[in-house]
Length: 456
Image (cartoon, rainbow, N blue to C red; front, side):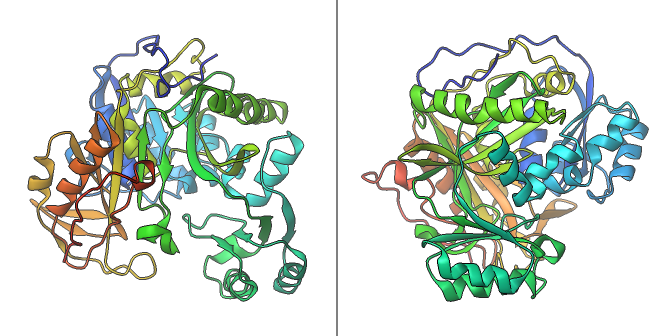
């Protein structure tokens, strides 16, 4: 069975895939993750054509963009049939939770993504907790799941602080609060359940114990039985340096050799990854796609904070920069349940992705700003600039979302990758935009990277 990554000194083995030539691939989504996917898929000799729906301004350079409401699964299936796509890869969580894989299966279309039942692992925090309890997967303790503000707030009188408050449904990474303040917790619960900030996603609330340690993003690609592990990454969720400010969809991530010891990775595989796959099979949930394990590395070992049923953003940008294998063939083999015996090879060293965000992000991003300096940024060696919230007008790009760009770089060391990424980011000019200056800094506290002034 697969499950090894070449990030802790192990010998890398190339993929042994049955080759599928002249593939036509449709990507669903339009963010930085999808741009990185299109960029990597283009490098495969087995790929003839790539579409992305709806895509964005930058993706249009690497794939043909097609209009689509990603939540409209029937229209997505119609599009795949019309285009004659050999494989559809789903980027964001919404279409998965809406049942896009089920719709494609009904029409006999190949798709990489789990069915609606399994996508509940991401679509419902309460479902995920109950799944972990049934299958003995280590996670934080639960104080309860609540459907009323009064009951949830009353429970705060008997918790140990800090506590974690989670909206049950999809909130684009912003439906979680970790706090040691009862008043802050109550205010967040009221916003979720009564303020309608996240709609139906906040109708139910989960209260968990707060656990401490270092967070880690561990992602696998699976056909439901066999799997390969992707290079581990570490994300930065808070909007500003030193983990200050509100939660976001992610402000930057990095990957480097040695993030996991052999022993710790084996513990993750044996106690978390394989039991998760066994649980899915036991509960008759056929799974072909990516599983993102958001982990906390505690003194008692790794524990699951959350599941995502797709690649992360911006984790994907850093991961695919290190991937030294045919990503298209890997995705096709997972979709066709033929991953048995596969492994992966990774470029040694490190990678990083900095997210350049709009003024006012995440609460109220200011859009429509002209983006300057992209050509200069892309001249920096070992850098790739992935577009997230951009639109293209002839040869100019304008901001169209809260997270605008992912400036990614690779290097022989994390310090080298950081220097390249920050050099490139400093060349991009967007009025009012901001990005964090401390991505990856915890890995080398003694190293100094020159401060780069915020854009504007």
